[in-house]
Length: 248
Image 1 (cartoon, rainbow, N blue to C red):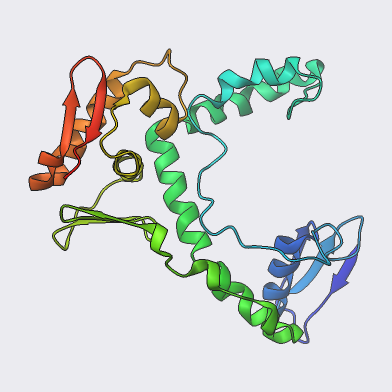
Image 2: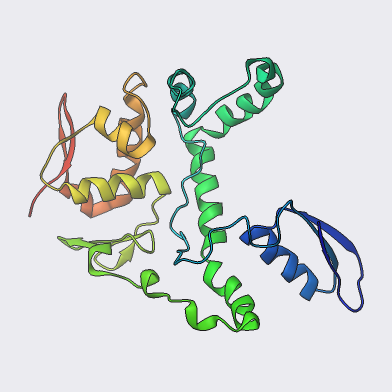
């Protein structure tokens, strides 16, 4: 257990876990005037990766509750080296959580969660910087990876897809796509000229297994066409197969 306090504590707050998130949270609370108690079996920071280079995964906004994830659980449980293990006696107590996890995997919920994570992670560099300055190690923070690289931009026939900003424009006009629509248009643009089957799009965009109704794709493609406006002429439907962006 570690305990720190400010000069004029207005309240006492307990932070469980002294990893990078817990330690940073505790320090910000302390700077805000709180008396902070940090609980961890190790010293602050010892539960994180240290002594090596690291990165801030500001673009990793996909939640764990992706559609189709629960269907993979039986296979994981059968694999002795798999990523998941459960004490079967605990399963009844786990059931309510599994139900909430399944509900969170609905496409609309996943999209909302991803947007919320993107908003939080967009501040990562700015939020950590004051603590690094305070610790005298601001020089170790490099932001090159956040710069726009040429491969982050896809342009053709007036359509511009900016993957670093999750922004799509057509003839300089923003299209205002949802996260799912952005994924669809990006995948089709990356594979321009090649037909993408509905099953392949379900797998690549939603993470679904192929037994899910492929009409999900058709519904989103209709919405995408509406938002593309004049650029919809670039989107080709190959009947009975799938979709593609035409090569210009």
